[in-house]
Length: 235
Image (spheres, helix red, strand yellow):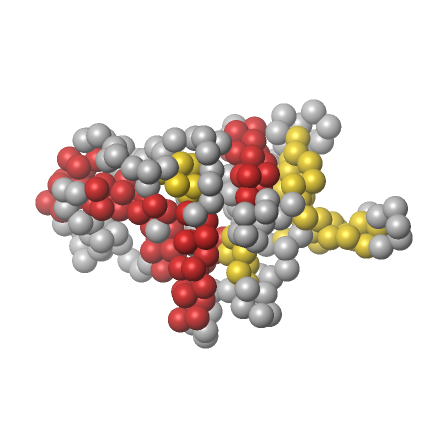
């Protein structure tokens, strides 16, 4: 190993870019993701197992994905639970310049992700919250939120299982100099309805907006499958 570079962007894991020499005398870039905080250690084994399965499944799918090099979910060989993968070029871009083109790229890539034949590998969909645990924003329209909570108490709509990234949003996509994009952080993947997978970009687009009375539950669409997926994933 000839260089270690901390990578920014993650809030639950320590991520480092490693430059190593291989046996043929050429350098190679890898990424090491480790969970070291008490809060993340509680979920590290599950997160790393899910991410390693997703990287294996997405290999050769057409979705730009790092190659899994190794994983140690139980910290049997590493100081902390860790995953090692190849490095993808690019960086997170959150500026206004070029946003229209990036949105089109995100939309096309979301179609690619949902087209992946996931079989039964990911876990079945679970809503991000429940009707009784969702936190209603201050000054929110209580009637709208009450209707959404009633909807969430009902059964999950029938759906054709699609591979869902579950956190596909601008902060989790790398763009290179040619404006090619690659999603990262696959630990939250599930099987679910494709409408749920479209909520990540919408959350990212609204991330900096105030959750005020003018902000209903992310385009809540009433008593319908669209409404269930919208609220069940976004709240």
